[in-house]
Image 1 (cartoon, rainbow, N blue to C red):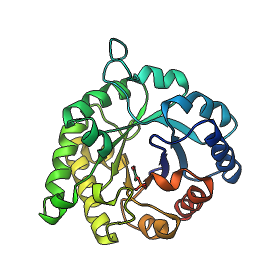
Image 2: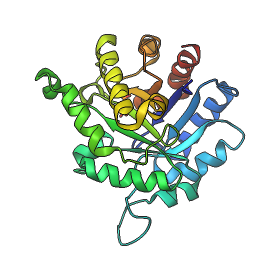
Image 3: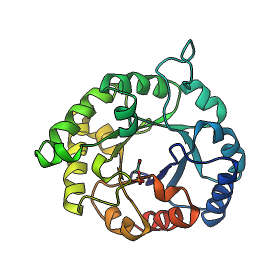
Length: 249
Ligand code: PEP
């Protein structure tokens, strides 16, 4: 049985005032059946960890460097994330692939370091609208998975998030058949590469405009083990019903 995971990506949102949202979330979910993860901006990680000291809610980073230290102005290492109290990291988000030119091999190098640093690594994959319209979705996903996921991946250290780029922050979502097709495909690729044991134990999240109104339907899809949520994770009142829907799925 794969442990379900509700992960929130705050992106570049949140200052000290946002810690109140974590307090509210912790109060609403003292004993969740799903794992809950929030990835706030790096500046809030250690205070978020302190705020959640008595809660099962976990904290992650949104990116890390492939090196552990050095002359990389503005970057954050996997070791620094761990030291601040994070135990997960998102890698290869489409916003980083697009705005920071991250290639599959960059994501893989970061993932190697993150895994070696005991961070559960959430690797994002997903197609653009043009790629979907050209019927290239599965080829794109296969290429991103093959290039971004390192060989040392296991069911414990790897989570894959399928995030169609055209669904992120747009209010658009693929229909359940489209979500199911890609998630089944990712599962089959992981089984082929890592064997059935590891391939079946990696959790697969859907991400892209998940809201309280569509969460239940998305979580009903086979091989959807949870969600990576952007906008709707910023406020406890929006994220909480998504967690409830996952707990009930
Ligand atoms: C994301 O950026 O990971 C995401 C899924 O964003 P949103 O939920 O806002 O579409």
